[in-house]
Image 1 (cartoon, helix red, strand yellow):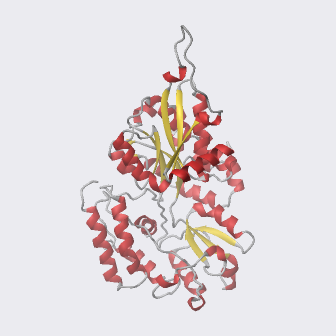
Image 2 (cartoon, helix red, strand yellow):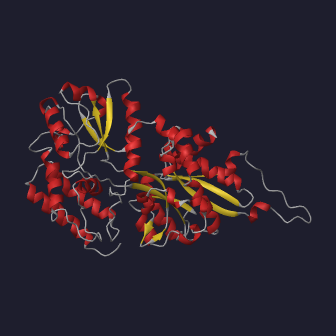
Length: 451
């Protein structure tokens, strides 16, 4: 299979395409022209097989998807001719639209939470509720609640999650050597935003390009995690109104963020950002990032300096929040055999697949199931922060659903946030002016009809 993988990547490079098709039969020697059927023969048996295709995430981290699709294809080789394709994540949203329009959508396709609801709203995906109602092996209760919620649209289930992480600003990693040099101890998960601001400001040395934190909510959903820590939400309950500059707690959270760069000089400004790298060991005392960085940072840092992890701080009143970033597998509404396609869907999102990814593949990660994240073999091999992330996922008092606008115009909302947010949080405009500019730009998108 090694040579097959290299040739597939070579083909992808030659064609310059976003996808590369890999037939299961490619593992076997190339076949010659089919012989004519003998007298009395019913003909080529493969012509009676159901043709199915599955899109997989084109990254080593997601090799498990190809492994388990291959296993399922081999187990159903008498029924199905399964084509396994690799698709670049950043190209998938547009490819789903194009393939759906041309009638060539994969029988199984993956989606990030950012574009999944829009694709589902266009009728691309099979409604799964009836298909899963009597399938005990689907075990929907095993999924984290916020992960499964990401597969619904308008009360109907259109996808099963194959991964979850608690968002980009979910964790804080500290350089313990730099922290202790400044006289501070490693904080606990019970710390709050005021304590973080104090640590960040007291450990910064802007003149020597050393900063206490890098926190900057580059996306509106990153700020949502902070808003939830302040005990509120940046959109109304029906997600049709943007309350960023209306809700007092949102305003308080935004001021805390802006102060890190203005009054406290605790984080790099716009002209100081280039080249800032926590793993270099001498620029950032702490970095705000996601659970996806824990293992990567350990590899990059090695023995260069001591580091440790903590959950993002609580808000002023002790609240905590996160933003569940999930990815789903869905069945095309046009699939030739819904029952078989759903069977593959259940297999790819199973405990078996998630455990193999996390423990056997080595470069993998837990999927969206409790049974995988809570696997003691996995937790014993992982940094203790993962056990605390699991506890956060399981705590129903901590809000975590992804904040999708009601009109599903995610990308337009994010674009307007990204275009107006920097002036506010870098302190390039007065605070009140910056707040209103972000508010107006984002509400402009929410006022539009459903995409």
